[in-house]
Amino acid sequence: MEKIVWGEDFSVGVRVLDEQHKQIVTMVNTLIEMHDAKIESEIISDTLTKMTQYAISHFSKEEEYMLEYEYPDYPIQKKQHSEFKKKTVDFCMETMVRKETVPAEIFTYLRLWWTSHILKEDMKYKKFFNDRGLR
Ligand SMILES: [Fe+2]
Image (cartoon, rainbow, N blue to C red; front, side, top):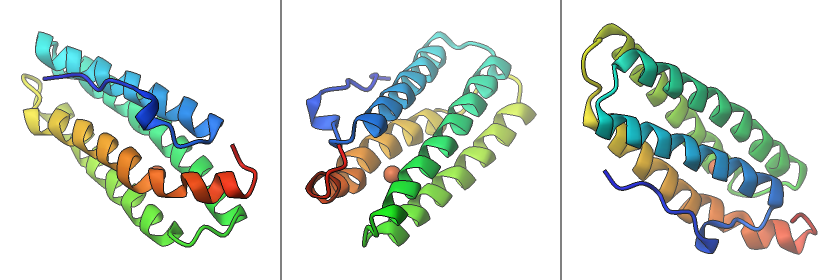
């Protein structure tokens, strides 16, 4: 599976959030590499758990800014973030139960979710935050 290639098109214009997104992309890419190498699912589930924990703290930072600046699409973001959290918890459970291979759908989901969330949903706040002096 192809890794995610970070480019300027991924920049949401807020330095802290860009840095966090980069970390997440790196973690997702690590998982993709593991999948290609067919590493045992225990190591994958540990990495998946770390990525989820990091993502949760990133979501709260992002949501904190949205509340502070009264971002109108906050409910949409909140909903998408919750769906992601629920889905990854399910994934962690799944990988812990089955020890052999991790279903490809997990990697496909992570790759697709992060790229589309950053490029579509998060990108919508770029101008909003920048106009209010948050960069
Ligand atoms: Fe987001």
